Length: 59
Image (cartoon, rainbow, N blue to C red; front, side, top):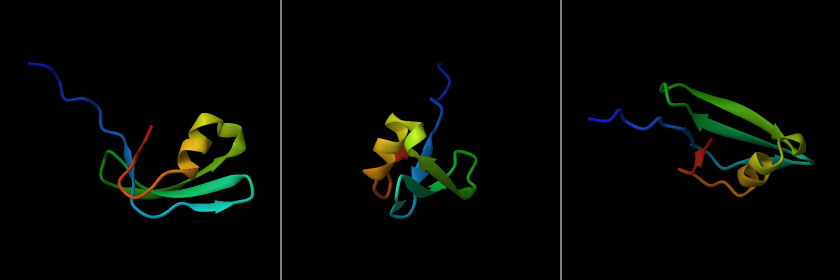
């Protein structure tokens, strides 16, 4: 048997985009919910967050 792959956070609400920032509401692997702020300094993750939709995963 192999261990189950690690789960990632899922987007549970539409992203709130601002000038150079994105706020995502996430369901974390441990079952808790919270918000995460991403800015342009986060590079590729920021670009992916701008295009994120409900149910998408976020590394």
